[in-house]
Image 1 (cartoon, helix red, strand yellow):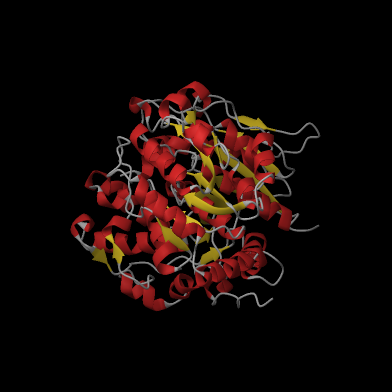
Image 2 (cartoon, one colour):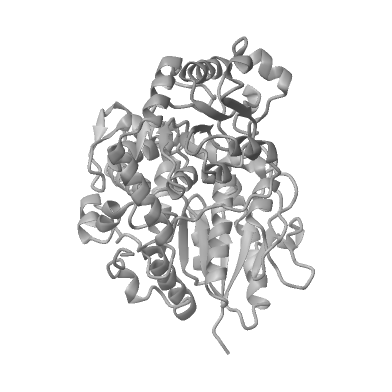
Length: 532
């Protein structure tokens, strides 16, 4: 009988994190029939229906609802007894498919304690760039040495960055001292992992990966522990989207190839009325063909509790400048929620004005669409700096733009500046276009047999199957493969019910798209966590 192994996945309840985690789970299952995965879904008070199922050998267990009005870090911590209960039950019914380890989100590293309770290894699934991981570990080491006032420093030297990183490119979570305890816990949690799986790929961040595989980095960071081995297995894209968007694609089908500027700012991205009008004036004045995903901000009191919504047509007429639709009807379209990956894949899409969420960056590179950076929150300023300054794969509109916890931007981006950025993007120099095209091809090749991500995934599966629960195998610390050439808590009996999604034929499975849409409101948690 073939060996089999079950992994317990614990994703953070942000929609982008959850979608990437489920895509990673499907990647493992589709690669090797011996892998079984149980995903434990942490729901928030404002979540909607329970997650449902959709793929064989992938099981979804919805943990009990959390208490309302708790900080997000407490909500994750609160689920530990329920996770212990579920894992204990899995061990009892895991005949033939023994538990092999935990895969926890980068913001759920407190669950590593639960894995240790069961004497199981833990892998952290890091849903951002390897460069961001390096930056956070370096800043963590500085914090542990007593250097915490990053906001007053013009720039910081990071061992894995070629250029000094300005403080304006740092995430808000390291600039606000109110969240110092979270920042410290985040860094320490990452260092407790047995390995870190990254949604990135070797060719995109080779300069960072080379440093991670050297002892010099550990010494330069003055870390008390060796760095966990790194597995870049991306790009992991959320490519399946069944939303009916016929009107969008009918319009795109009528546009010339590579002629449309697509503006989209993520699941939590929205702007105030003044900024919306500046964007509208820029689009009108540029006369560039555009597709604009324009979302309505939630009420101020719930800015980080509820996601943006779509405007009613009558509201748009009042919001946008007079005669905007008349003047842009021949070359532009304003929409609400957008199926981003499918739009980026369309031949008519020639440019992308983006908030620089990591999933969006990976999609844009994969489809070879040039990016203009306009970050909003979280680590997006760091991502923009990486794209523009480190990789030379994008142009800048407002790299230092930032939205604070109360949904207040640090400045208004003028129509002139936006228009200039759009024109620069549409007329991007040939060398940058060449690099982007080359990286796009590499992002496609890396997951094919012989590619670096394919190799890393294979080595990860070897560990899961052959080394489960026995510590890390020696080969995890070898250099990366060559680049591609062509017991439950005492009160468990009183706990709310834990639900399991199962298929009609007895299998257990989950759909990444259905799940992410079902708990769309959870996206606020990620923004709330990273905002400080």
